[in-house]
Image (tube, rainbow, N blue to C red; front, side, top):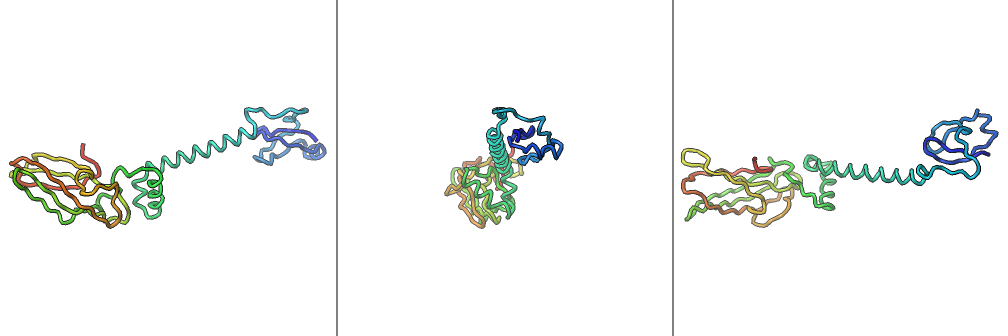
Length: 209
């Protein structure tokens, strides 16, 4: 018997001398399947593998590589959460991820599936514009909330002012997301210039720069 070491994965094992002669000294590592000359990498006496490349260290490095790959995969999943949330196959995964890690989608996954229902805009005394509506998520999945854009125009159609409001300002009851088919009450009061004679409401994924 001789003690040899695989040059590829550093695994130690014993080889029968007679069997070694029969195969011309070439052996195949049972760990990584590498073929090498056993006598070239023969270890004498109590020699052991280099501690820096020991099997235990190789195992730890493999575990670390798997953890790193998992972290990178999770990061990629987080970055792509908005488009993935639109797909029926991957939506449950994204929702589970966002329950475990507060990832809240930064922007609606499908803005065109949000609708303002029964919108009513009135202008009262003191130039206060009151906006009442129902915000509906017509998508088949939960979405983060959009911004509300209010545009004021003069009698000649010129834009006097344009403002953007996050959900925490215009929702009567704040919530982080809106479920499929659900609605939320919109309540907003603004003091506007007297020369503003018309207004327009729009939903945005994020305010325009």
